[in-house]
Image (tube, rainbow, N blue to C red; front, side):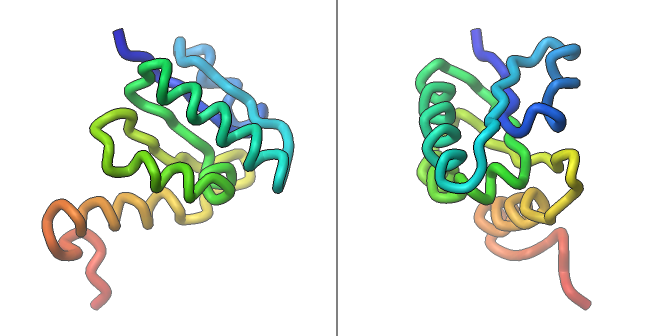
Length: 111
């Protein structure tokens, strides 16, 4: 059975545990977050997680790792805003996915 995980800073993700999702706090910042987060993301992918929500701040640090899994069917790695707010990364990734699937930007046209 597939599972759902949430990665990010503790304050941003602890509420997801109440929904029954598996949470994985990544405490360190910068280079440590890259190492710790990259390792944890790889573990989750290998542990048959179908969906991995990741805070936008952490997704920014792990963008190369996320790109590595972007062509795979599973897992779906979805950036979510953290407690510090929305950085717009999640919206950019949705836009890129739609453009890739459809061939043009049908959702967010600049007028």
